[in-house]
Length: 110
Length: 221
Image (cartoon, rainbow over all chains, first blue to last red):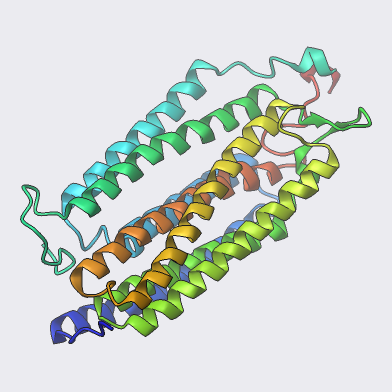
């Protein structure tokens, strides 16, 4: 079985990351808790939607940067992934703008 | 470059091909899910009326969702991502036993998530929301079902990796890289759910009748 001989530098780096992962996991759980509380607050939906989007983006980037090691890895990987992400967001924005007609079916259900 | 770029055959980018290909795949999957999420949101905006159940009554999705269950499964998936990060870290340190423990945790949490999704789908189906009876049903089941399929594939991959670790072939830098690539896939499944949780579930609770309204024509209000 391959219980590899530990390189002290690798061990130090991984131990540091281990603590980062625990801290991040706690933050992610806390942010999810805040999101759930937010939706029941008597605040304007637009405000809550903005905050929810922001919190989701924070969680999203926290996971890709730390859990997925993008912050430690080659910059090329970040830009590769970011290209896909940008295209996805552009698709989303284009579709919302192109089809921004309100309630086209209400006459059928009224 | 950090020590993450473990020794591998020289490549023109300096990045191992497996890792590069996985990131490319994830970028393309991003577009795939981006399209599905966009479609769901778009049709939620265009068709805010929810669905009609078997008895012919108009139903609103807000009354169907169970935010406690979805929050629980979101938490479970986030924690599985945490365990996956620990599993990758363990492999980098050459701690095979720790890797197995953490991967078992990921598999267990993944199965709980899938169980929650099966329960949710079954409940929705019995309440009258099917993939065929409304635009909402079509986009909702296709989006969350595709995500669930990704989770199932991830679980299968990790189960195979878990048993493969007993052959003695999963070790060293190559083994650590293989686990890291599997980890990338699992984390991706998690980040997609982060978006789905907000864009599909949480937005339905904003305001008295959700962000999309109650589906009633503006003139009748």
